[in-house]
Amino acid sequence: MAIKVGLVGTGTVGGGCIDILHNHACDFRRHLGIDVELVRVCSREPEQAAAHGVSDIFTEDWHDIVNDPDIDIVIELIGGTTVARELVLAALAAGKNVVTANKALMATYGKEVMDAAEAAGKELAFEASVGGGIPIIDPLKHSLIANEITSVMGIVNGTTNYMLTEMAERGTDYAEALADAQARGFAEADPTADVGGYDAAAKIAILASIAFNSRVTIEDVFTEGITHVSSIDLEAARDMGYSVKLLAIAHRTDEGIDVRVHPTMIPTSHQLATVNGVMNAIYVVGDAVGETMFFGPGAGAGPAASAVMGDVLEVARHLQQGVLPIVGCTCTDSLPIVPVDDLRTKYYIRFQVNDVPGVLAATAGIFSKHNVSVRSVIQRGKEEGGQVNLSYVTHTARESSVRAVIEEVSQLEAVLVGETSVIRVED
Ligand SMILES: NC(=O)C1=CN([C@@H]2O[C@H](COP(=O)(O)OP(=O)(O)OC[C@H]3O[C@@H](n4cnc5c(N)ncnc54)[C@H](OP(=O)(O)O)[C@@H]3O)[C@@H](O)[C@H]2O)C=CC1
Ligand SMILES: N[C@@H](CC=O)C(=O)O
Image 1 (cartoon, rainbow, N blue to C red):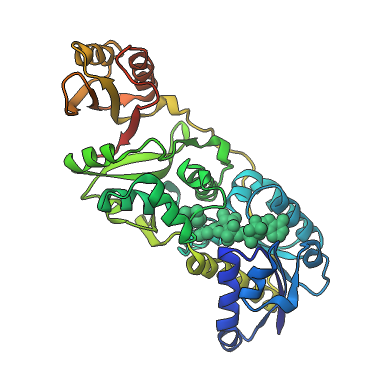
Image 2 (cartoon, rainbow, N blue to C red; image 1 turned 45 degrees about the vertical axis):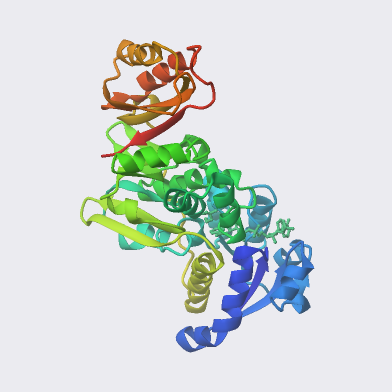
C-alpha cells in the first residue's frame, strides 16, 4: 500500500523528517508493508529543500499541499499559531490526516483543531509536541489509561536545560549558552518561548489535559522562565546542595489542577537533578502504576523527527488497516485551575542591595512582618559599601505572602530594582 505525505516546513524538524524518510523508506516497507512517499514539500526557503534533495517536489505555497487530492497525510512543521492553525484546519477540512510538532498550536487551539479532526473523521497526531524524541503522549493516552494520574512533572524544555547545565558546569554566560542552543537547533524560532518558559508551559498544558482528561490551555499555566537566573544563583544552589532546573509541574489536587512552570531548586540527589544538557525527563504518577519516568532527548532534528515520523507511520498503519480515527479529547467538563497565590512551598530569594548599615535588618523585618519564616540568609559580596547579594531561603510559605515580601523589600532605597531572583525550592 502507498501512503502519500506532504510536508510543510523544512527547518530543523522538517529537515530531520526528510532525512528519515530517505534513509528508512525501505525499512517501513519491510516492517509495515507500506510505501510512505513524500510527494510534496513546502517551505519559504528553496535552499533548504535543495539541501535535503527535494527540490523536484518543492512549492512555496502550502495550499498546494492541502489541496492536492493525492495526499493522505499533511505534516505541519512551521510552528506558530497563525498560519499553522489555518493550515491544519484547512488540511483537516480537505480530508487529510495531520501530524504536527506544534505545541503552541495544541496548547492554544487544541480543542478547536481536535474538534475539527473529529468532525472531519481524520486523525491529528502530535507526539513530537512534548519531550522531543521521548514517547509520552502515546503512553499517557494508551499504556497508562487504566490509571488515575495524580502528577506529571519534569524537565520539558531542552534549550533551557542545556543552558542551565552549561552555565552551572562550565560557567558559560547566559547569552553564549543561548546562542549555542540555537546553533544546535534546540531553540524555537523565537527563543523567548524557551527562556521565558512558554514552550514548557505549552507542553505541560498538553500533558495535563491528557493526563487529567481536562482542558488546560497555556493561559492556565503560571509561568516564569530562566531570564532572571544568574550564575550567582547557580553557585548559591550548588553550595547548598541543590541544582536549578526549569520544572513543569501539574498536580491533580482536591481543589483542582495545580499547573505551573518555574525555575526550581532540587537536591542534587534528586533523579531530575541528573538530567542534563538537552535531555528531558517526565515523571508520571498513577494510582495503579505508581511512579514512572520517561527520559530522552527533548529537542533537535533527529529526536523530534523520530517522534513526528512515528506518528506518520501510526496514522499510515491505521489507514492501511482501515482503523477509525481515535477521538482526541473525550472530556466534557474541566477541572478548576488552582490559583498560584495558594501555592505553599519553600523559596530562595536573592536581593541585590547597596551594602549600607541596617539593610539586612530591614529586609529580615519585612519577612517577619508577612509571616514568612527564614531558614537561612547568606550575604555575598566583596567590598564594604559596594553592592552585595542577600540570598534568603525560607521555610514553607504561601506564595501570596512571599510576593508581598518581595514587593515591600523592592521599595527599600538600598535595594536594586529589577535585580531580584526568586527560585522555588523542592526538597
Ligand atoms: N527544534 C526542535 O527541537 C523541536 C521543534 N518542535 C516544533 O516543531 C516545529 C518546527 O520547529 P523547527 O523545525 O525547530 O523550526 P524552524 O524554524 O527550524 O523551521 C520552520 C520552517 O518553517 C518555515 N515556515 C515558516 N512559516 C512558513 C510558511 N508560512 N510557509 C512555509 N514555510 C514556513 C520556516 O521558514 P523561514 O525560515 O523562512 O521562517 C522554516 O523553514 C515547531 O512547532 C516547533 O515548536 C518540536 C519539537 C522539537
Ligand atoms: N525549543 C524546544 C524544542 C522542542 O520542543 C526545546 O528546547 O525543548
